[in-house]
Length: 341
Length: 263
Image 1 (cartoon, rainbow over the protein chains, first blue to last red):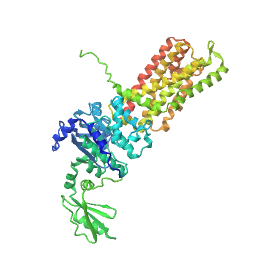
Image 2: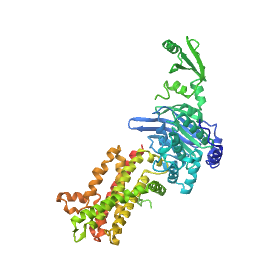
Image 3: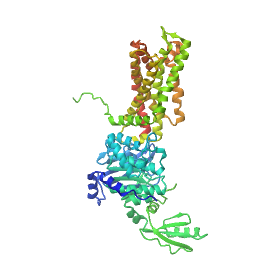
Image 4: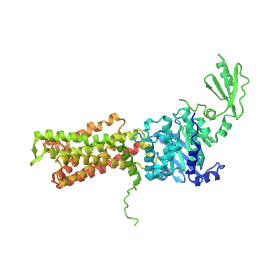
C-alpha cells in the first residue's frame, strides 16, 4: 500500500492553503444542524431536475456548512450527478433554489464557478498537452496569470505526488494518477468550495486509499467539500455528514455513525449456512421479521430499532457479529443493495 | 435615459477567449514540425502541381494572366477553409467527446465565449496557412503585388465563417463516422466548385448561381481581386455576403453547442 505523501509537502500546502474566513465559519457553527441560506456554504432547497418525462432529482433539500465534508450516497441513478452538475452551474435546474457561497447558482453561474473547484465524474483531461500543461492551461483559463498558474501547478503536483510526471503525456498515467490529476486541477484556483463527483469510482483499492489519504489532508485545510459516492466506505471515512439518496430523493441524512445507529443497529449478525439449510433459515428469518441480505454463503441480519439482532432461534448455523455500516443502512431503508452492478 | 434601447450584447470575458486560444497554441507548438505539413507542405504540393502542371497546358488565360497567378489565391483560400473547418468540426468534436469542454466549462467560461475562442483559433490557423503558402507562392513569383496582402483579409473572413460552420457540425455529429461527411460532402465540393481552380463562368448556365452562392466563393473572389488588383463593387458584395453568412451561422452554432453541452 502507498504510504501517505511526505509531511513536508502537506505543511507547505497548508501554509498556502485556503482562506481563513471559511475556516472560521466551520468553527463557529460546527454544532448547528439546521442551516439557513445565510450560514450554509452550499444551500439546496426543493431542487428538481427533469429530463423530459424523467424526474432525476425530485425535491431535494440539504445544506453544507463551511469546512464540512458532505456526502451524497446512493446507487447509480439516484440523482447525485444531476445535483452536482446543477450546483456547478453546468445544468439548468427545473425547480427549487440553489446557493453556493451566498451566490444564486441560476443567476450567478459564472461567479459560482469562480469560487468552486469541480471534479467531474469523467476526468476530462487534455491528451494533447503534458500533465503540467493540463494544470497550467486550466489555471490560465480560470483566470490565473501564466506565472501564478505555473507555480500553483508545481504545488498541486507535489501535493499529489506527481511532481516527476509533470512532463509526461496524460496517456502514460495510470487510472489512479489520472484521477488525482483531475482532482489536482480542481485545486488550481485554491477553491473555497469543492464539488467532487465520485472521486474514486473505477479505481483499484490501492489507488482509492491513496486518494482518500490526500482528500483527508485537503479536508483538514478547512475547505468545504461536497462529494458523491456509491462506496459506503468512502462516505464513512471522509464525510462528516451523509445524505442517503434514492430515486432523486433524500431518504435520510446525518453523521455516518448516527445513521448506522438509527437504522441498522450497532451490529449485524452474520449467519453462515451449513449445507442444505438455506431455505429453512430464510423462512425462519422471515418469521422473525428482521431485514437480511444474502452475501455468498453468508446471510447478514440487521436488528430492529438499533438493537442487536437475536438469531438464537436459528438451528444449524454459525453466527458471528460485525459492526454495521452504511450499506446496512441503505438496505434497511430501501430494502435494496446500494450497489447492484 | 430609460427609453434608450440598450444593445443587449452580453459581456465577453476576455480570459475565456484567450484561455482557449492559448490552449490550442500550446498544443500546436508541441507538434509544430508535423503541423507544418498541414499548413504548408500539402497546399504547396497542390499549388506546384496545378500551377506548373495544369498551368503548362492552360497557358496564359483571361487577359494574359498566367494560370498559376489565377489559381494561387484560390488554393490559399481553399486551404484556409480546410483548416478552419477541420479545427472546429473534427477537433472540436473530439473535445466534446473526451469531455475537455466539460472540464473547461467548470471555469467561469460560457459556451458563447468558448465558441468565440474556437473561432478565433480557427481563424489563426487559416492565417498561418495563408501566410506560409503565400510566402511560398511569392517566392515562385505567383503573388507579386503588395495588394496580395489583402488575401489575409479574405482568409480572416473565411476563417471566422468556416470556424462557426465547423462548430455546427461538431455539435450535431453523433459520431466521427458521420462527421467525415463534412469533408466528403461539404468541403471538397466547395474547394473545387467555388472558382478556385477555374472561373465560375465556365460552368453550365444553370450551375453558376449555385457556385456563386457557395460559401467559399466570396472568399476566393475577394482574394483574387486583391491579387490581380481588380477590385470593384462585386468584391464589396462578397464581403457583405460573408458577414451575412457568419451572422446567421454563429448564433446557430452557439445554440447547438449549448444544447449539446449544457443538459
